[in-house]
Length: 89
Image: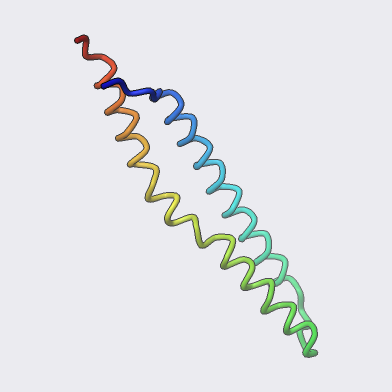
């Protein structure tokens, strides 16, 4: 049985996931900083905008913990592929 996968490809995907995590965290932080810098949220329209932007910030950072959990598994998979591919039958 042949395995048609490359550990280099898995590691490249791992790096892409790390970049995605960083981008999502930066997006969420930027939104949070933007809404905190507004001094006057005193009317209903601005209060709704503030709440909506806060929800967007939370939703944009939500997948980060799951993506972080995937990283060690990706490395284990790449290592397993390296070990498998090093065996000569």
